[in-house]
Image 1 (cartoon, helix red, strand yellow):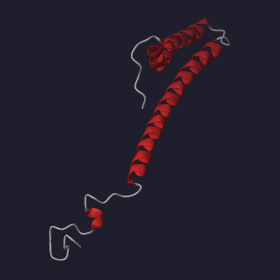
Image 2: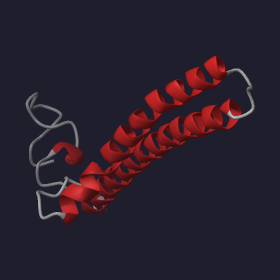
Image 3: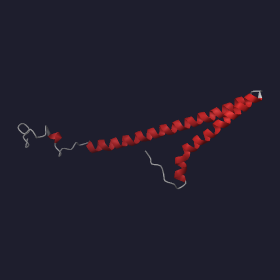
Image 4: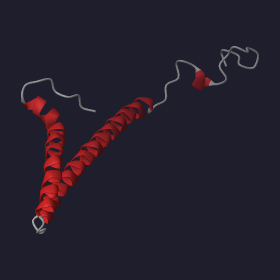
Length: 117
C-alpha cells in the first residue's frame, strides 16, 4: 500500500511483483530443476549407448548368420558369395565396436576425458 497501486499507474499490481518478494521454495524448485535436467541428459546418453550396442549386435549376428548358413550350401559360388558378404560386414562391426569404446579408451589412456551430460 506504500506504493499506492490504486492511484500510481507505475506501481506493481501486487506484492508478488516487487523485487523484495521471494517465494519460500523457489531455490529448492530451481535445484530440483537442475537435478531433473541432469537425470534427463543421463537418460538420453544411456539411450544412445544402448542403440549403439544394439546396432553392433545386429552387425555381428548378420556376420554369424551368413557364415553359418554358408556352410550348408554345396555350390562353391554361393558359399564364396556368403563368405565375401560376411567378410565385408565384419570390418564394419569392428569399426562400430571401436567407435562405441572410443570415449572409454580416451579416458583410460590419459587423454582428455569426455564431458558427462
